[in-house]
Structures are given as C-alpha cells and as structure tokens.
Image 1 (tube, rainbow, N blue to C red):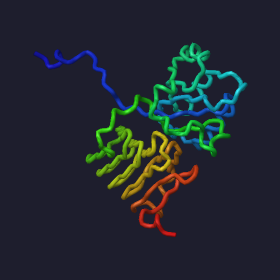
Image 2: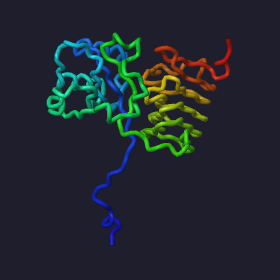
Image 3: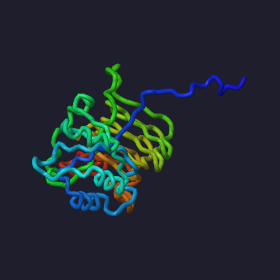
Image 4: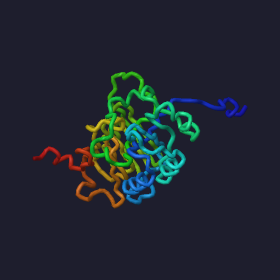
Length: 259
C-alpha cells in the first residue's frame, strides 16, 4: 500500500514567525512614502515581503483618518506585507477586519512588554519607524537553556529564530539566510545573509562573527544594509556589531575595549 495513504491531509504545528512593526507617527501617505523611500535608499529588496504589524499607538490625537487600503498598498510597494494592526481602538475593529488585517492586543504579546512602549527618541519625529518584532505567542517556560546552538550551515532561504535566548552558529551562514535572536548572535564562522539580534527589543544585544560579510544587520530593530559591501577594515576579521544610541556601530573584537 502506498505510504501516502497514511499521511494526514493537514497538520497544524507551532511555528516561529517573525514580523516587523511599522510604527506610524502620521497617517499622511505622502509623508510615509517619502520616509520609506529615504529609509530604503531606493533598494528594491531592502525588505523581503516581511510580515508587518502596523502600530498606530504613536499617531497624534486628531490626525487625519487612516486610509487603510492606501496604507496597505503603500507598504506593499516597499515589500512590507501587512497582516495585523496593533493598538487600534475598538471603533476601528470592523474597518480593519474589512481590509483583511487582524487585531493585535497588548495581552496577545506579553513578551514585548519589556520593549519600550514609545518609539526611540531619535525616531519619535519620523513619519514611520520600522522595527523587528515578534509576531507569535510567548515562549514556553525556560528549561534553563539560555542559548540555541546550530552546528550545520544555514542555507539560503532558511530562517532560524532563537526565541528568548542567544544564538550560537558554528558553521557558515550563507547569503540569503536569516538568523534571528532575542539575545545576542555569535557566529564562529563566516556570517553572510541577514542577522537580527535583540529581536524583542533588547538594545544591549550584539552580533559577533569571526568573518563578517552580512547583507543586513539589525539590533533591536535598527537596521543597516551593505549594498556596497561590508567595510573592508572589518571584513575577514573577528568583528562585533552593537547599538550605540540610535545607530549601528561596527568594531573589531580585538580593539573594542581600547581607550
């Protein structure tokens, strides 16, 4: 008898899903379009159809009504894929649902309570801020393990998320791969692809690699891309990436503690 006859028609399993938060400071689509154009620098694949949660907590009282259809179209123009709205008042629920978006409440995402409720000061005046965010239920109670260890190469198209802990990779992270951790990321090999540390808002998280050549890095939602290549003075040597204020800082591991 064919093995396929014993397969279930469908299985539902818990899966790690990471989204970004689009934190709106205005509902003016012209301002939002200009801000996203500046943020992406004209790079068509700055975002890669990332699932997106629209956060409207920072919208000022009395601002113009949100054009949901126009906003969704605008975000998709920049390859952001809206799936939910956060911090929406009850009276918006029906309109939001009519546009195929789900409502996300504070109670549904307790792991993000440790992150700042307001955009960072440097982002407060920006029309839109985009930050890495967790888009799933909280992790089970810790079993005492603070680190996820990956001993095999992370290949193009793979996404690994160390939820609630650090991530250690002892093999190469290839171009097109994505590694994410709520804590710090340590790659004892070559880091290509995308690396996002402090994904739940930990601004103290860092990214370490013996050999740096990433496409994109992020610390607590602050992004930096390297379309022109990683800085030559740090490439091919042990390097760390951290957040200093509101900017990404790159330094040699060997010189990080010098005056």
